[in-house]
Image 1 (spheres, rainbow, N blue to C red):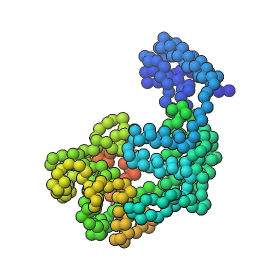
Image 2 (image 1 turned 120 degrees about the vertical axis):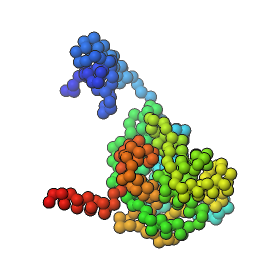
Image 3 (image 1 turned 90 degrees about the vertical axis):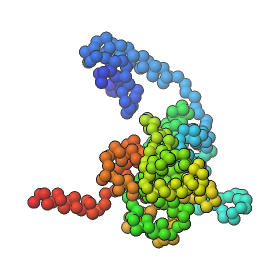
Image 4 (image 1 turned 180 degrees about the horizontal axis):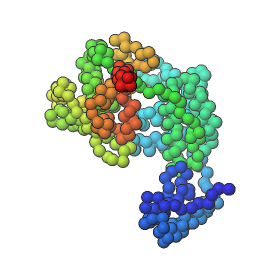
Length: 383
């Protein structure tokens, strides 16, 4: 038989684990200690009321939601657009589109400046149908597992995990809004997906600089000598740079949307980069976006990634022995790896715009030579 709910003393309160699952205990009332009889009686009375309320809720009829998967995704993305960064909305939209409309789709070619053909894309074979027309409550764990299995055949583990993250976030939000009772995606486990470990060497960086034009060269220099995410290239404005061109302050970042401590992200600018930014400010009047493309418009996420991929292929920088290719984010890994031995862990997290040290650890890649040298020192000390 299951144990009856009870109260116990913890950190200045009588608490209970009743009704909180794997979460933190529920605080019932403050107490001076375990022997505080009055506080215990008050806590036990509150616990009895909790038990009665839960039993009443179990017997009460619950409304059955008729919302479809497509409508649920639309509502979830509206909420995400209001509370999260644009990049998060972009990622969730791309992943949930597969859930709603199925995959894979092939876009039909069309010439620039001409209207898109109708339909603009066609289904490829084999095609996995989407769940958009289903009621959200009808999505079962086995149906979610079958769609994940189909994704594994076409996409890399990282993409499949991103799809799973988006689906879990959508259904968790629906539970919070009392639209659904269960999350069928909770039963699915993420795939093993090796993280990025490649850094950009000085030789590779010089190859990239030599293979591009002045417009994109400024972007490469900025990412090389700062801990900035590629998204900063799209968002940075001259108003975010101090008058001496030595410090950048970003008030709305990936961290600021989720951290309990709301503070801007600040990182320094070295002298050479400062001159580059100063010259751009002189040309553009010192206002507006810092980095613009050849058409005088701010960069988009896809345009930046495509530009770098074409540059990487043009200068002959292929994959390493693990099959990993250089990407724009490799510059951030390179910078933080170089900074790690020189500054404290809290400061490294600050300039990386991280709240969790475990996140920062994923960006620091110890060179093989240092590991070998450390092992040699240990062996020498053992002799």
